[in-house]
Length: 168
Image (tube, one colour):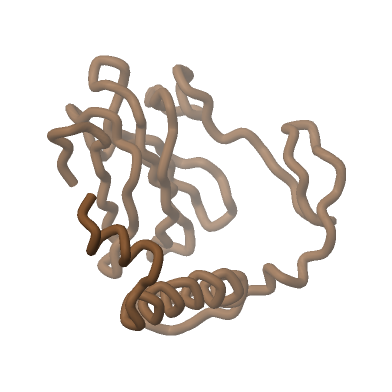
């Protein structure tokens, strides 16, 4: 390590200080913003009531602590067929997202952080407007260790392989 680098660590420049300060403020502000609103696909902002849900209750039969009035149910288990479909849910579920459908339902997408021979890639569960699981299917195959990912403004899913030659 050179003397210059050593000095910068001990005595950062104003620019470094400001950059790090603004980044820190961004993290603090994001936390409160995420609990209040979400941007929809059409660009509109929906306010959330997340901060006003009340205290968490004791764990339910699935081990989840939920606010009063909420319930949980198991919708898929790794290595087992999903509901009445023939699709076997993947191992090591990881990053996921939910997409609304034109009929009022939604699709949950989930990465599989494992190898292709063990069912890697990503899968999807489709729900009706009434919350019933109506379909399950693979949306990505022949990839390895799909860890991160994210939804896009266009209603698509980007899945990222977590390995030295991984792809998005």
